[in-house]
Amino acid sequence: MAGREFLHSPGPSHVPDRVLAAMHRQPLDLVDSRLKAVVGRCFEGLKDVFRTRGHVFIYAANGHGGWEAALSNLCRPGDAVLVPEAGHFSNSWADHARALGLDVEVIDGDWRKPVDPAAIERRLREDRGGRIKAVLAVQIDTATSTLNDIPAIRAAIDAAGHPALLVADTIASLGAVPFEMDGWGVDVAIAASQKALMCPPGLALLAANQRAVEVSAALPRHQRYWDWAPRLGEESYLKFNGTMPEHLLFGLAEALDLLAEEGLPAIQARHRRLAGAVHAAVEVWSEAGTLSFHVPDEAARAVTVTAIRTPEGLADRIRLHARERLGVSVAGGLGRLSGTAFRIGHLGDLNEAMILGCLGALEIAFIELGIPHGRGGVGAAIERLAAERRNVAG
Ligand SMILES: Cc1ncc(COP(=O)(O)O)c(C=O)c1O
Image 1 (cartoon, rainbow, N blue to C red):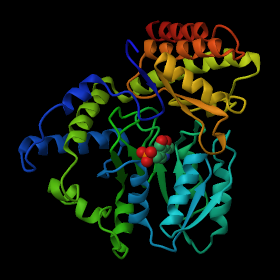
Image 2: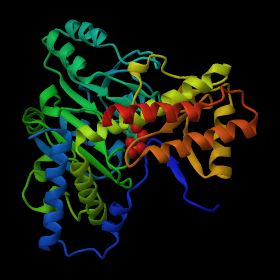
Image 3: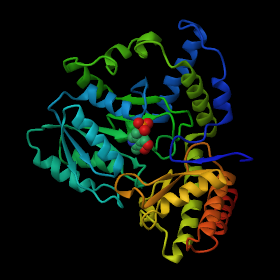
Image 4: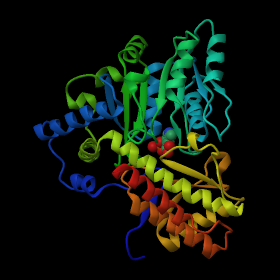
């Protein structure tokens, strides 16, 4: 197919040319000072993005590795953790914790709404002996496209007077939405390279405060690769528990420079603007009654991904058509939304023209597949974008 392919999954996301170019080089000797400088840029830049002066850990791993890194450092088999259900990813994290031998309690949630902090507070108040070691909260559940209120979850833990650590999955949100690790009292935050951080998959990125590091240090060691203790050393070889994934670090350092150049407030405003365009289009498409928002309340919708419900089977036909015939990849429904939703990723290295290209291709797919939809979704997206840009300029 001629022209660019458009990747609109909610991760992996589009990788900027500058990041690709930074990776296009020979590896360096492990003790080369240039490599040390790149490693330093990565650790310092990540602190700025997590908004912490705590400790940062970088693993050659994916997001699942990040989950395991956090749990392995904070808990031992038999320890209890509380997981407010946000959607497919909170549930997968709960499964992962069970597989590590943890005693996992899930607070049932509604996949179309954010988690309820009051339910967390109630459950923690009942746990008088403080058995629950950590609350595992997902900021944006990529499967449902809901945004969860991390400061409200912190407030719920505090209101219950409970010592549980707050561990936040910011894998689909870090960089794109406000996150204040220190300011919000998050003990551990987990991210991954392939989403709003605009890098290829392959790095799990963690931040931990002093309390979390002390909890880890006090536990008997039972694993090595994830262990924070050696990774707190000065030597790069220790920080990575072996040879570092150099090329991913070259890319990450460049991506962090890009984030610093644009600035987090501007990046987050851009994500809100582009999400607004997607929402405007989906609102119009929904008028025919076949397609609809998975998250009805606009305030609860993520700005990085939008899940759109369809009758059974239609979502996959739309995805296939868009990818095979139009060169635009959107994601499918996950878990209980499998086959009945598709998801537009709108995060990372993205601008107005790119999101309009994606929406336009989807509209072509609806027409070619004979899917009833309100006409003019792309026009509504253009109007929304133009109005927002006028507001900024004015
Ligand atoms: C919110 C969230 N958590 C965890 C993961 C798992 O990350 P990975 O697929 O890199 O293991 C994902 C992946 O999409 C995610 O969106």
